[in-house]
Length: 278
Image (cartoon, rainbow, N blue to C red; front, side, top):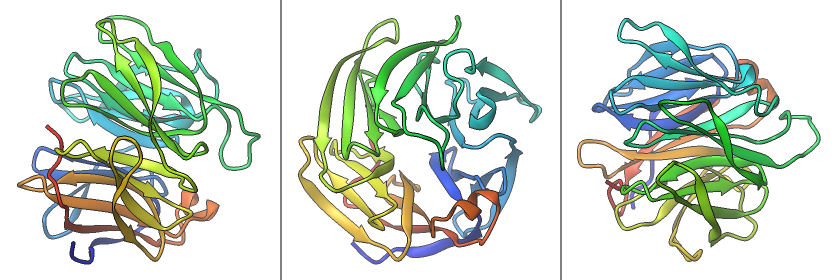
């Protein structure tokens, strides 16, 4: 692989990159913004959101879902650009909510780390299911800082990064959206997996903040590729016209970055060995 190039510079705290509708989307937590990025690295603000963390995905009909984690709300962007409530998660867990991933049936899975970060005392986290036709409910618990999540293309398996357990954990997805059959998808000693993405060969890329790298692993934990970086990698996404561009969202971690500065966040890009799954 070639060395990653800088596509976007000057972000406060980039997170949750997604390739959608021919563009890269991501959240700048430090600025409270959802951004789109074109091929030349030009950014536009697609939405402004209060309530960190901010993570995003789309419903099957194309409407954007955004987690306003500190407020415990899942928001939906309507065709006119307004953000409306999609689900209130505070009754399930009072602590901030984090990552979201959606499936082809309109189900949204949202996780919470289970404690206030940074500075709060550790407690295990959970995953909630927000179905299209009913109230949200918890479908998994006992996770050590759940972070990035992906669904396999057939919608049958959900993989979640457990940042405090150095592993990727998998669940079978039942017909009603419930998660069953919990198992270790990959044990990755001494790692702290954050945001993840899945490629067409069935491997997972994960960002690692304290180890300042992005790593590609196969099911079972065999390391396939590693990209060393000069700052923490918070998340990664595959996209581009052929699905072969790997986007890395990197930042010099400090609690001050959550408040908007210093702006050390970047998006870096390079050609990956395999295209995006699906």
